[in-house]
Image (cartoon, rainbow, N blue to C red):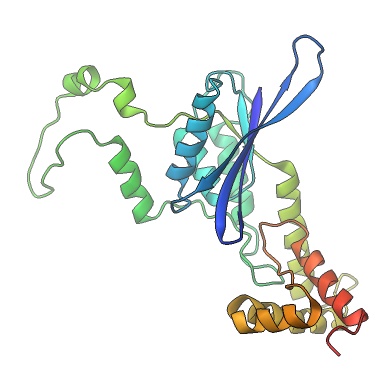
Length: 265
């Protein structure tokens, strides 16, 4: 069996959803079920996501049965599996594959037409390195100014596996659909920046997009503006978010619908 995981925010709260997919041994039909929808109450670090996923797999007693978990290309998900995924023989995705995928994402432009980041940050910052150190460290921290010796025999025999391995995740797969969505975002950005040749965007599109971006930015920053818009048109505007597929299209469609119906007149 395989699982998928995705995080999202709604009404000021964050959630992690997990689904499972398998072939029914009796009917040979593919089945899909929802395992969990967990409220996330902490900062969405890679270690917190690893903790939640490990807990869901253990609760349903499938930790040793899941052959792969698919997520989007979010940096925290990718780091969680890079640090805690177990290795399996015969699996096509390896550490080398992850490095290639990271390199491809890293080569993408950092910003889209809406000013959102699309690049997957693969570097561990100081806080994350410290978090990993806290997870795995089991002894008294040495004084960095003094020489110290480590008895490897004690480390290998006295520290049990349960103490050293906190989380255990299946091998990781990045969602192909999400990757293609990022590729499309990059192509749009390149066409927007390179305003020459047959692939250049019409000037009218660029001008309209810049105006829409100003509205979206004001809508995101001002509660008074949101309330005014909702009072006039009966709903809040949709705002582009790089992790939400088709959000730029949906946001432009929303503005176009309002203008076409003269709701702001």
